[in-house]
Length: 192
Image (tube, rainbow, N blue to C red; front, side, top):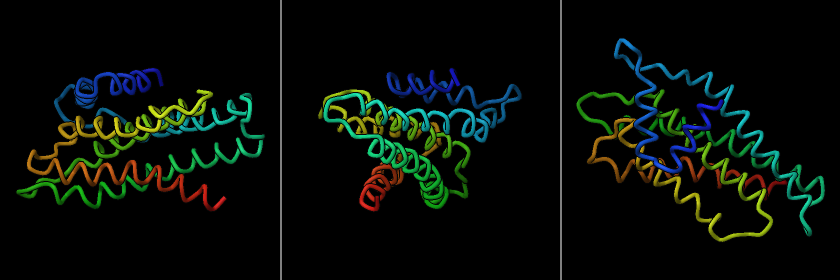
């Protein structure tokens, strides 16, 4: 878990170096890909992170004019399920659309696609955490998701996107990651 958090912090402060380090971590001693265990990363790191970040919605109850218990519970549930479902939706979109960005019969590495989505949504969950623990509404926090787009852009080499496909890839990745998180949050807020 500490290595996972360290990777997230490095992606935030130095996205290029963070993706390079993840790429180095993913190679086995014999030179093949596959050292990062995505299932273990998902169950032992990602799910606890989004649960903890969602539970910070209860901190807002301590602020003047903050929500009551049911309002905080509602926010926590919406945040958790929007992050949880966004991961699965974005991985599905990546697996469906990524082959269109490659030529010559190359196939994208779906493991690396899932790792990119997992880390990107982890950064968004930290943005949710920041919004929950800061008492005042800051405009800067509302614009932090645009930084996630920059992190995704710097990770295009990590998943092997050809240079000619960077533009369409960025549209697809931004829409599938950020669109899923904030679209589902909006939908759940309306429904509840």
